[in-house]
Length: 463
Image (cartoon, one colour):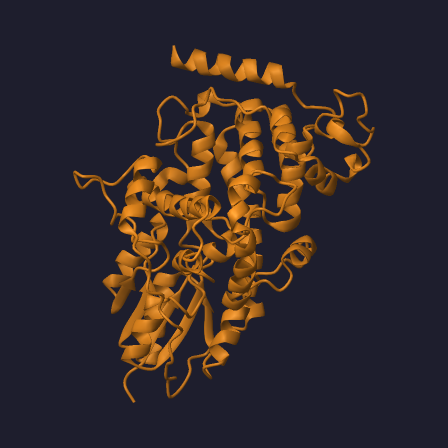
């Protein structure tokens, strides 16, 4: 039998449309490996919600491997230490992996190249980051021309089938999945996520859910901004953990030509765009792209207990703004939040409370099942006005108006039970309508005062 090939897995937990698995299967017996590394990512080690999802994604992948009489080898530790030892232990002649672009993985990949026979493949994005450039050969900074070039560059995809592969003569030792301690126990706060997602983990479950969603993808344009409607696919956790590839979703939509389907494809392209941004600016998750937004610009929670309390009010969904509170409670319960509401809650933290966007990025990183370094950073910097291509800081969302405009009443009633009895438009601002129940907080700041403070801060720092 030929010599073993290792497939090193990270955010690519699938068998189909997986070029690393395909290449390894063609070369020899395959050993699939996942290493839980809490050291290499530094400040961006996996958050709690992502760890919960990861547990179930690994469990689903191991079952898929079982159909090939194979299994998933689990280890934990610093990958630059663990992987070379595993190569020596197994006698593997090559390690295949899908290339990752987060700054910590780029550094680790470079170090490993000097230690082991590492072959990197592209496969987590529609097109390899950096492959679509301007006429002068430079990477795009602005989304709209990037999107146009992506549409021109994409001419369908040949989806790699799930490979058949041989197994090694002997298997290396593996940790048990429970040994990775990915699930919360003391306390177990994941009940809401389990109720929300059920058994929707792994490639088959994800693609089945997406095929069902395609029945209404034509309505995506109209419904994607309505939090009370089921108008989005909720594929983001599956994409982030690599249970499906974006190419698989793109091809599944190949027979759909509606405006809704086109807009959905644009959202997949936005995901590629975000990855291109962090390739150019690796520290984008912590540092603003634009000048003038250092710590002196913001109300830093470290400067006083009042600001810290306001941050915690926002995190708990106790701001007195029903649409904001509904979103933050949905996030805590399910590990997911409707995209329109993500923008509203982010804008509230940044512009109503004048708290640095990095505090929001950190909270979303810990509480989102789809917490993606590139997308999370790009979205937060877009809202804050600090990004390379972003909304202007002076464009301040009015959360109460947004709630009414996008018919969020039923969404609020679902996630803020104190307000579930309120009917009609009063649900958007019960305090203004004189029907705020005693067990629901008053607004921590008025919209008009918050807006004026934000604009004055902006002017003062631009003078």
